[in-house]
Image 1: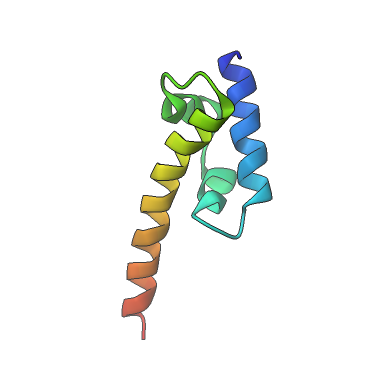
Image 2: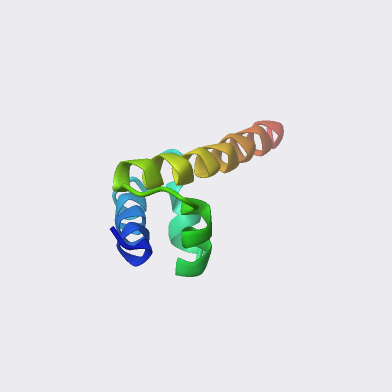
Length: 71
């Protein structure tokens, strides 16, 4: 797969999973170029989603920690 195809697949996954795991960050904040950087050397859709999902998960965990301090 080309990098562009992987980016499109990751973005489609992000839209499908917008409400979970921090994927909303990718949909709202990341350009195609930034997604390509996060994908790195992944060669498959599954690998690309896993790599990007790890980063989005970290962001989601951090958001949860911040939200927990609001109350």
